Amino acid sequence: MLSADIEYYRPATIKAATELFFSLKGENKRPVYYSGGTEILTLGRLDLIQPGALIDIKAIKECLVFEFDRNNLLTGAALPLTYIEDANLFPLLSATSMGIADHTARNKITLGGNLCGQIFYREAVLPFLLCDSVVTIAGQNGVESLPIGQIFNQTFQLAEGQFIIQIMTERRYVDLPFVSIKKRQQWETGYPLLTVAAIKVENQLRFAFSGLCPFPFRSKEMEDELNKAGLSLPERVKRAIGHIPGPVLHDVEGSSEYRLFVLENTLNEIIIELEGR
Ligand SMILES: Cc1cc2nc3c(=O)[nH]c(=O)nc-3n(C[C@H](O)[C@H](O)[C@H](O)COP(=O)(O)OP(=O)(O)OC[C@H]3O[C@@H](n4cnc5c(N)ncnc54)[C@H](O)[C@@H]3O)c2cc1C
Image (cartoon, rainbow, N blue to C red; front, side):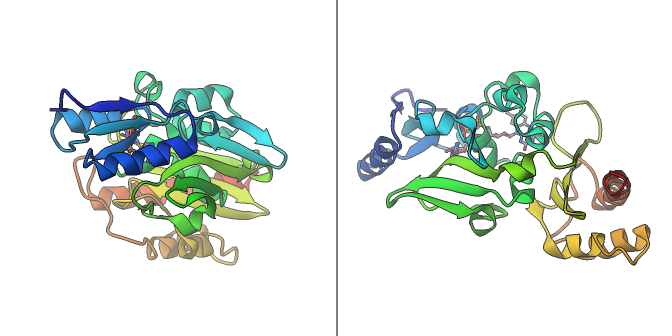
């Protein structure tokens, strides 16, 4: 159960949020950043986490932007997923986001919560991995911006007290041809058996995956194989599957054998579609 005397704060600035985090930590209050709150409340009620103080980041204006700033699209971490979908400034992100949970849950679930939560699918990271986006984070030493490839490795590698403010994506990526496919064992909502997002950049295809391994990823080795134009399509797919960077999931959503079967078909489907465009 969440403690009845849990403290709630809603700072209006980045600096106030990080200062609050460290002062609450100094008082042993077990602070956590709070965005949509769906996961914190669920895990808190099950007693799987015991936060003593919630720092809501939804009043920080930098966390709520969704706009082009010269050549970059800025996407605030505290935006609910449905807001991102409705504005539709980044069609690949909209398409991937629409596969997450259901519409009612996505009214609450935020981008930052999806990216940093404990539920390991984190499907909203796929478009940013494909577009080499830059992540702006705040922490004890102020604000810094890092290429996603440097700060995301299976999970966001955030130090204690850091949070994501926003993600910057070059404008040239947001309108590229893309495909985002989510396959489930059954039902129209739910966790993925497999989600694959792909874009075509100057005749090269890029791929990112969720639901295949216990973490989302983009793999350079798999992309190299999938882009080998001199080989047949089945051969490219077979070689790429040899470079999956972790154990293939085997769980209630589906066996590892079935996932590999679905992966093979999905990669074929995506390559035929994107190479035809
Ligand atoms: C019914 C349901 C179905 C779901 N289905 C899917 C699915 O199909 N695919 C999928 O990928 N996920 C799915 N999820 C997972 C969901 O996206 C995550 O649980 C997500 O954390 C919820 O977002 P939130 O904004 O409510 O997070 P919160 O509960 O506010 O926070 C979750 C965690 O993220 C941290 N956090 C939040 N924002 C930031 C930030 N800006 N910087 C750093 N840390 C931050 C918090 O401190 C906390 O540890 C589902 C969840 C639910 C409830």
